Length: 286
Ligand SMILES: [Zn+2]
Image 1 (cartoon, protein in one colour):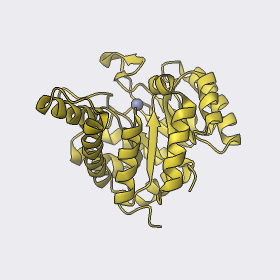
Image 2 (image 1 turned 45 degrees about the vertical axis):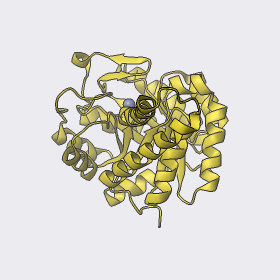
Image 3 (image 1 turned 135 degrees about the horizontal axis):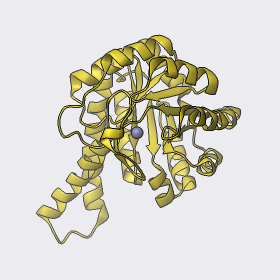
Image 4 (image 1 turned 90 degrees about the vertical axis):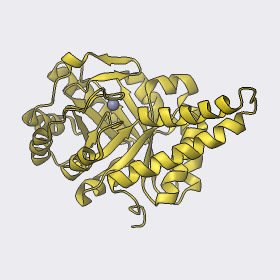
């Protein structure tokens, strides 16, 4: 089937208490690896690319590759643009075939965030594309967006309700204590806040900074209404480590297939584990 919007798969996930995993991919092999994992797990999946990867590969290349993967696959696949504050780039990705976009104006004051998000929601909805927005500040480092940890501000539940109502977003990423990258200690997730936000907002919630959160904490987030979990850093590490292992054993290796194939295999296994954790195994069956 063609690429689908993530809206219905995420609504279903929230309704049934599981999360769809959104994997950031940077190469064709990474894209294929997570799609193979989704097929094996019979799980819906979201392929994500960062602004940096769109600039590196091109939105048209990514959308074409994701489109081929979706057409071949028996599970629903959505293609999402992660954290983007550039309106033109969002439009470019929608034109290229992305079925979901994130407008991240969370670094602006509330009213500006509302205005910019509503503008994107208007054009995206006309194209049948899912819109995700962020409220509060998710800490850490992700591509070109850097937020100092001490600056990380959590989302207010009442603001979340007003934000969703005024912008019409399909999915909301509230800052609840997670951070991008790999945690130095345990993340300090504010579960009470997730519960209060979920009570006021019925759209699927998105968990950013999903790499390295202890399993029990991920499960708790999902049970409270987090219906999409973003995984980026962990996959990059698994993929790169597998390549490093090939070169450690054979420094003279010069056939890309010899290191890409094991890297893809390692990625596939890691992706299936994430899907199991989020409870989405077998959810593509109905
Ligand atoms: Zn993020």
